[in-house]
Image (cartoon, rainbow, N blue to C red; front, side, top):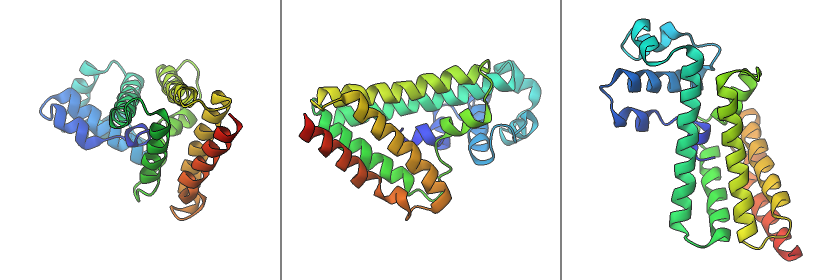
Amino acid sequence: MSRAARKPNKDAISREEPARPRERILAAASDLFYRHGIRAVGVDAIAEAAGTNKMTLYRHFASKDALVAEYLRRLAAEADAAWDAIEAAHPAEPLAQLYAWLESMKEHLVDGDDRGCALANAAVELPEKGHPARCVIEEAKNAQRNRLVRLCRAAGIDEPEMLADELFLLLEGARVARQSMGPKGPASRLVRLGQALIAARRKAA
């Protein structure tokens, strides 16, 4: 949802504790996983990019799968923080928060380095239901959808769950269109389409 939800904020991770091996490993993994894909990146490459070794990596993360889960957990936490920032900027104004969210998503879609939503990309790469990252992905996506439902309901929207799903699917589709057709394709209409959906539901209320 936020930029963090679709793309790891390497600088933010690095600024926390840049000298700590765990944070260096997580920052390096986040960058490599996002740019190259989870399956394509091995622990040797992560350790090298983090300036450490596999022994240290496994001391902090029991397995590559555990590292992947933590990478996605961080993204979900950053997405939650972005939602909180929108709420703080528009307190007690659910409709304004919806519009601010659309504008925020538009900014991310025009990012030239965009490779889509990191959580969605991970879901495609990790179809195994037993993978430790799957529950992280599902919980994060459900949290985004649930937040949209709450905002739509608070704004007095007719059929809040339906609008939330429409907005959710609009964003997911825009992210794919951005990758396949560029920032000037259908993805560029995200805000206008989202506003039209909201307006239609408000009229029906």
